[in-house]
Amino acid sequence: MGLSKQKKSSIKENLNWKINYLAVQVGEGTHLASAKKAANVKIQHQQQWAASQGHPSYTDERKQTALKSRLEEIRAKKLQLKWFQAQKEIRSSLKKGKTLETQRQIKKLRLLRTSLEKTV
Image (cartoon, rainbow, N blue to C red; front, side):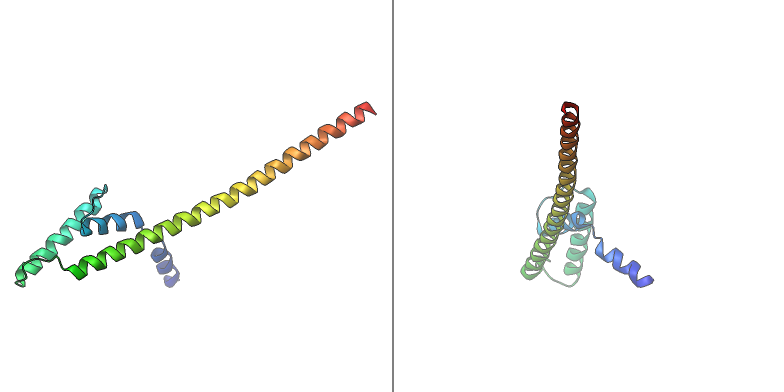
């Protein structure tokens, strides 16, 4: 039972927050204040650690590249989820449309039958 709860929580991610959090770390802008604050705090901690270790700065090129690739992965995942939702909506709309069209055709047939019965 505990495993299924863990699976559910790992499936449902807040991709918007992750995207904005990584965007701030990479140097892009964001509209989420909480992500800005969290990323800035992390950057400050990393810079403090680098200073305490005697490193001039904590802007490692490999780290930035890794963050950018992770950001692109998460953006791609979000687009995949949006694509799936759009397909799902289209399918349901087509089913509804098909049902409505069938109902319209049945109604026309009934009207024609009643008009035929009246004329005969």
